[in-house]
Length: 612
Ligand SMILES: Nc1ncnc2c1ncn2[C@@H]1O[C@H](COP(=O)(O)OP(=O)(O)OP(=O)(O)O)[C@@H](O)[C@H]1O
Ligand SMILES: [Mg+2]
Image (cartoon, rainbow, N blue to C red):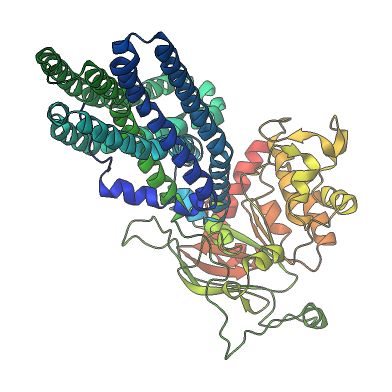
């Protein structure tokens, strides 16, 4: 029987796997105990051939039936001990490893929530999903089997080889002959397998993304009759994945063939040589029996090295993929810490209230704000290129601009969904990067073009926008402001489940719920990205009027496309070419600004056409 190479994966794989240590640390005692138990169990198995030798050379040779029975009893006890010890090992690791997997998954989820929007813009959701599911499962399996058994099998093989050499060193050397070729095969296998494993896991991510998109976009797919092209895309991806899996299987087949055949040949040679020696009287029959049964007992430890290495390699890949996400920097607490020497003036609510006339420091201010998306091509023009805008305290400012002019981008900068590239944004005189995000996001409430609702009750969805203390009264008020009283007529009122796994609402209904969510916490600053676009003009007017009344003290920036929305704002800012090119009332701008007049007239014509 051959020794196997010390089961060393390439250094990079080991280095990847070492990163699991922080998660494994808390359960290291259990894992260590389990490994010791497994080594003992495995070595117990190796005692069996020695008992056989004793039976053959002792009681059998002496025709002592009682001795044979005693030997059989020993064998039975050893077998039971081995089985019990392996069972104990399983019991020792099952619970802690399920815990490790759960902890890693929880960390991944928490981290995903804290990663900036720019990260999520860049990463396909399927790639994240597959990391949170398949990859973590691979890791748990690695910790349960290969991690322990690479060690256990190595020790078993070492002990077995020593036993065999002690029985008869010439036969032992015959069995050791394939060791070197097997090591080379393992080394080659590791190198190739790591590449294929990585490819396969990435392809699983791509496939997950495609499935997710087709489920989310099922209406578009049906509406445009794109089943066939989606199915083709799916088939292509899944064929590619199948190809990669087959490549993995081919590599595994290769290593299995080598790892099984070479040692078997050596066992055959040892058998012939041993029989000749026994015939010549140079070797006892018992020794040959013990020798060969030890060799056979080592077959499994040697053969399993192939798939243990494969699983380790997949686990190393999974670890890399896991930490690719975990290494991405989360949003910082406060962008740049406030300068201790010159503390930023934090205006109190009292001060803000005492000043009836808005001062320069009050309200929402953009100062020379520049912004370029992190993934934009180098050298491209920034989306925002020197925006200066002052929304006074308590004022509602409409933001108007052509499509793609950067309105959504500008609104996303206020709650720091993206970080300004240069310049600064202040709320009542305080730089938003100087306050904790938590505080910033209680000050500012947002509603975006796409009203996202979660799989939860209507009430829960709305109350997401408020502190935990908010209750029925706040909910009722917010629903009233957003003209979302239709909620009370739903089957279970505010408890009605909506979102992906609930009742489907109309676009306008969803917008109104998103708006209710934005206002339920009575925010001091309200940023609305065209949140009323799906409402009819009358509902829109009602919403606006209610908004004004209830949120009198709120400073609001409202992206608007329609003159009806614009009219309800105190002033209008025109965003054009990455800057604010004009600020004034709707009528002023209509008179003095050709671009504004053009934007608004176009809209008016369209809306008139629509209403006709
Ligand atoms: N995540 C992103 N990464 C890179 N570029 C982006 C990203 N989001 C938007 N852009 C680009 O930024 C520009 C401004 O987009 P933005 O969504 O702010 O326009 P908008 O004024 O809100 O348009 P609309 O009126 O159609 O809503 C566009 O050219 C767009 O291609
Ligand atoms: Mg937009």
